[in-house]
Image 1 (cartoon, rainbow, N blue to C red):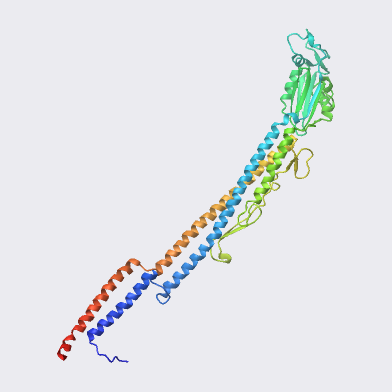
Image 2 (cartoon, rainbow, N blue to C red; image 1 turned 45 degrees about the vertical axis):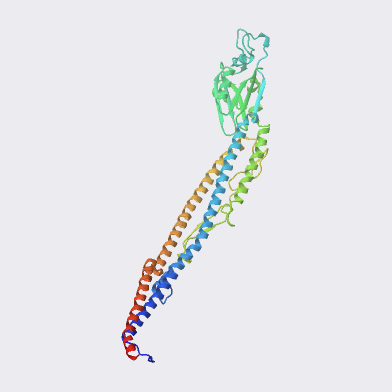
Length: 432
C-alpha cells in the first residue's frame, strides 16, 4: 500500500540509508554482546554446524579426561603398593640374614673324649691342646711324652677323612705320620664343617649345614682308608663314635634368636597381604587382580582407542613367601631353625624381589602411556575449541571499529536527512 505522505526523493534515499545503517548497527551490537559472528544456522550454516561438531567432540574428550585421570591414580596406587611390598621383601631378606648369622649354636656338633690321658702336671712350656695337636694319627697308640709326640693309634699307612652334608661330600687322604693338627686343618678346609681341639684335649667337629656325617679310617692305601672312613672305623680313635658317620649328626637345638626372628618374619609377611589389599583406587585394585581399562577417544567398537591393564593378585603366598615355623614345616611353611630352610627362603625372596621389579616396570610403562594420552587429549581438545571459535567467533577489534563507523555513519545520515528536509522549508515560507 502506497504511503499517503509525499516525500522527496532525497528524503526517501536518506531514510533508506538510515534503515540500512540501523540494521547493520543491530547486527554489530549482537556480535559485540555475544562475541560471535555466527549465532545460528541462519547466519552461516556451514560454519555453524562445523563448529558445533568440533565443540561436541571437544566436550566428549573432556568427559574422558576424568576417566583417564582416575586410571592414572589407579596405576600410581598399585605401583606405590608394589614398591612398598618390595621394601617389605628387603626387610624379610634382612631378617633371614640375621637368622643365618645366628647359626653357630644351631648346627650339628660332635665332641669326642680327651685324646690323651697325659697328666697335665707333666706338661712343661706347652698346653694340653698344643700337645694333642702335635700327636700323630697313625702308628701304635701312645700318649705323648717328653721324648715323643705320641699317637692316636689309627692302623694303616694312610688315614682318610670323609665328610658329607647330604648334598656335598669331601674326602682327604693323609699319611699316617700326619698330626691331629693336620686333620683339623683338612676338616676346616672342607667348607662343610669346622674342627678344633679344646684346652681339655677334646676334638669337636661342627657342621656348616643341618646334617653332617664325619668318618675317619685307616688302611694300607688311600682307597682302603676311605672305605674304612665311610664306616667310621677309626672314629673312636679320635674320641668320636662310629655313628657320627653311619647315622650322622643332626641339629637337635633350637635357637632362641631364630625363634624371635620367626615372629618378626611372619609379621612382615602379613603386611604384604595388607598393603596389597589397600592399594586400590576408586574401587579398582590392580594388586587385587582387578583389570583396568582406560578409554582415550569418544568412538565405539573397533574404532575405540583404549588401554587395558591386567591386574595381578599379589599376596605373600603368590610370591612364594612361606610362613616361618620353629620345627617341622608343613605346606606353605619353612623351618627357620634349619640352614637349608633359610637358604631356600633367601632364594625365594630374591625371586620375589625380581618379580616385583618386573611388575613395577610394567606399571611404569603403562603409566607413561596413559599420561602421554592425557596430555594429547587435553591438547586436542584445545585445538578443537580453537578451530570452532575461529569459525563462529567475532573479531572484537573489527566489530568495535565497525561500531564506531556505524555511529558516525548514522550521525551523517541524520544530518543528510535534515538537509534534504531543509530544501522544502522555502516553500513553507511562501505559504505563510
